[in-house]
Image: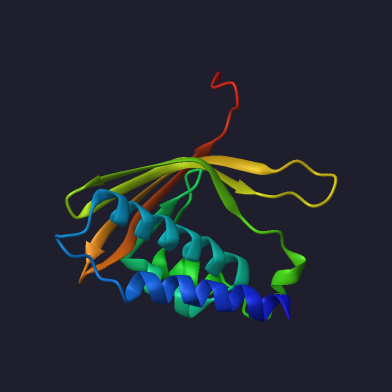
Length: 155
């Protein structure tokens, strides 16, 4: 039941984002709200292993760079999702301290990405920078970069 609820929320968020294409009359606040919903739908797609939502969110040519230097492509991410995995077994990913900067048809989202640890374990955190672009009227992620997280900012 929880899986169906999460999937419904995820699809509703994506539907809302994809059915409200960008128009030049949108305010900056409207664009930021759309991007926040799109980011949440993206995280939910990871949580629910939803290849359809992931495909709609990631632009052709998308890459993600991990702290160890590994780079995954759009296909790597989509094919890495396991639709047989029970999302109830995994905690929900989220972001903290997010900022959104919109510059024309490009947006930069940055902050701290949190992958919650199992009970009794520490959360896995990374700093992130995601580049989104308006493509055919829809916000899509074109690139993502994760860096090691240090709460004190000292290496």
